[in-house]
Length: 116
Image 1 (cartoon, rainbow, N blue to C red):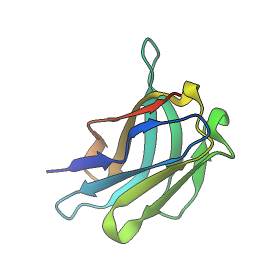
Image 2 (cartoon, rainbow, N blue to C red; image 1 turned 180 degrees about the vertical axis):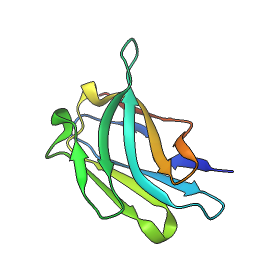
Image 3 (cartoon, rainbow, N blue to C red; image 1 turned 180 degrees about the horizontal axis):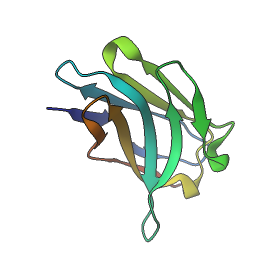
């Protein structure tokens, strides 16, 4: 059984910061790449950032320089530090993990709202 549990969403003012966390419980299976996606109302889900086990990262152009993805491999946990948040960052953020021999899994989503 593989489960992803997210935390850290909420309401923040423009220019503020939030940190998202996602812990994967995998019953011993290895987690490969992990990432964060987001979906705003009326829009398709999009990649925000991803990170490999070796630490190679990839970011959407819209968040480069503002968001930082990191992971703790021993804990199967991925983080997303979001700084200089903008109203257009408002969305439900989903954690994603590729688990070896098991496939791809999603978290339940956490709401991030940027508003004054």
